[in-house]
Length: 224
Image 1 (cartoon, helix red, strand yellow):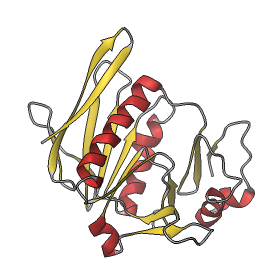
Image 2: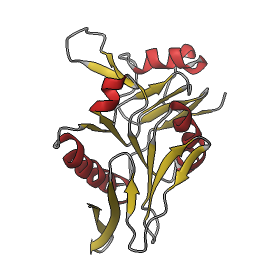
Image 3: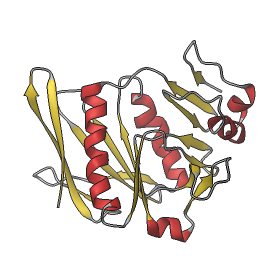
């Protein structure tokens, strides 16, 4: 088992042993309230450093806002951003993606279910188990290998039908939509104008940005 750990973080032995132990820790009061800690098929990936405001937080906010308008406001499902845990026993996976989209049809079909909170109060949930419709991951300097190498096969094993990846750290903005096929994810090729179709959401998207002032950016997720 490989653990990428912050020196100030103490992880219970059972949480590092298997998925069940990790999930029990993740919903307990001892679990850290900041940072991101994922269980990836026996490996713990820990990122406690703050997000980059320009290349991570801003683009995540734009994507989540537009998806919320398209999905939640249209009565098609729900959109989550940050601290929304998704677990999959078949994939041996428990993660907190940057953005998660759940359509009502997926929830009704049983492909995904919400895990009730320990309080037992109606309508209170702490975790999702199964395969959300769309997961969005935004690359940071500390997450490149995880986002490009470790997560895709695990998301595929979990049955997540669509994976979005964004890299805003460089001069060229990269926005990818990947569709799950029998052999894994296939990158959907954008058209000449940069539009990429989302099979799961049934429309095309294009992510652009412009500089608003020195070292400041504005992102725009267009759709049609």
